[in-house]
Image 1 (cartoon, rainbow over the protein chains, first blue to last red):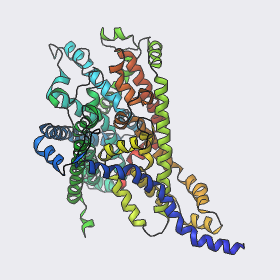
Image 2 (image 1 turned 60 degrees about the horizontal axis):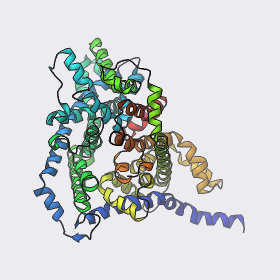
Image 3 (image 1 turned 45 degrees about the vertical axis):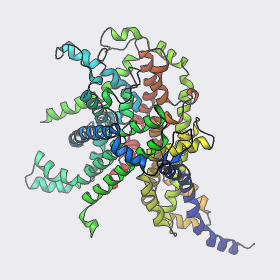
Image 4 (image 1 turned 180 degrees about the vertical axis):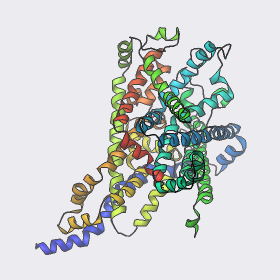
Length: 311
Length: 267
């Protein structure tokens, strides 16, 4: 075979075939291990099935039951929303403040970033465990400290209080995500051109005024990103509440006191794998959650998409 | 004002570190001593606690977690890099469609297909092994998206064109030219996948219920139920789980932070 014909064959087949071959592994594995299960779960959500006996088709009855006749699901939805309402604003404000402070440091910038990101990369299991120890009513450090200082007469039952448990879960999320929010804001600050600040300085703007009128508006996109992603991951809150009640005390109490710490995913996991095996019904929970996330994503995109994009 | 700033940063940083400190200190005490007072200083019982933990099959669990994380990293980076290269550096029919597909896949939470996935795994005969926890990383949407972006900026088109004219085969170009250039991106992606797979709790919790295949998060969350309530030993186990990852992070903190902020600032 002559060299030229080999080259021309390569020209014909090579560049045209390769991109498809390169994309294939991802597309195939996605189809096999993610797309197929997602579709399969939707089909299951139309059935009444406990995983063992025969399944029977019931249409959208699972969804109707879920949204109209399952107070525990509605409660888990509220709990999730309430906890999000607690931790998202706090993390945003604290994260922005910390980022602003750290950004203008001359020394120790890297050290402070590194230290504060440590919680973000820690196993949630460890976080759940440590927090359930810290807030244990008998042996927990928080109660020991508060009683020793004299703020409390006797230990407060943090984990068995409706609002106490939610607040502690929110605190866990804040503790975990604060460093992440901080470095995201700092990354956003680095792309603000420095001459904007210099111009402001020339015009006599200082400190807080510069921060309010320049830094904050320019970080708007970052804030939107953080809010959107933390709402989406907030809807999926599971590790923290589950581990808070499965860690230190060892008792596997589902949902916390009076189910006030039950989140949507916890309800989903409990219905399908822990207390029950109602695969059809639990799939309906998963899809309802998906729908909520989708609606939220579309709404937030509509509301926040920059005006130039709409042209 | 400067004072407030410094005090604020110091307090928050201490609060970030405090739970780790407590964890480490508690793992150095004798269990019964933990409740006599507030354990603030390290004790001398660390080795005994470690021995208790290691006796409880901890070595096996640790290697399970390592296997899962390393395999996940290899799988996820491989498929992501390949599709990233294709979408970023080739002109072909369906390129735009593929890119949209990747973005759409990022929006589907894994939990939506969880039940279907588990039943599928049981049906192909790998339920209750490490496979389900690994295979989920076979297609990692964020990774694909990240690699598309990274390739687009990092690799000069001319370089690929030159290699092609010089007669280098397409796989040859990929392995000998593209991979070395995208090493920093690979490192970022690999550390992120390792971290997320190492910390993953929900998936192993619902797929694995044989203790020989437990990964660290499930093992630890079960310690309290299965074994005698030895809190000091549990803290020692936690320390051994978290500290290596934390050290890894501190060593490569620049890469890590670049990875963590990668999606945000551009998107």
